[in-house]
Amino acid sequence: MVLIRKYKSGDLEAVTNLMTDLGYPTDVDSMKQRMKLIENNPGYFTFVAIQDHEVVGMIGTRLVHYYEGDGVTVQISIIVVREDLQGKGIGKELLAFIENWAKEKGANSLYLSSGIKPERIKAHEFYKKNGFDINGYRFVKRFEMVQ
Image (cartoon, rainbow, N blue to C red):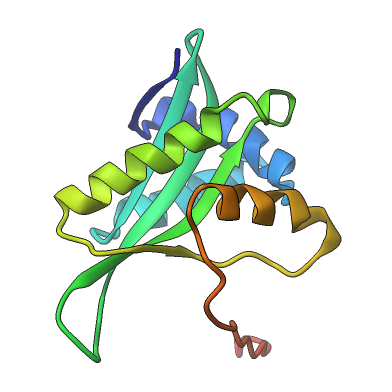
């Protein structure tokens, strides 16, 4: 059985390890700074999946209001399950939890972005299997920060 609850600072080490499972290795100090910024932003919400008293997954979201119309949607910024537990239904439970949470917040949809890389093919199939459709492109322009 999986319990899903809000992120707590005591989850930091496990969440840091989940970043490696997602393909973005980091250290606890860097993750602590990121989480501090995220926790201080009232539009962001982080939840963790707990199994056998351990953090085994997480989902991070934000509420997004439309410019072009009324309403709100929820962007899933991150979803990750510990690598050794993938395929066991934890990700599906995280998505179901967020869908219900989003509806409670008055949202009419969920969306997420995922890279077009071979290592993301399984994730793309997971999203499709859980009711997500591909409906657009994401454009990114990178630039160096002025210091």
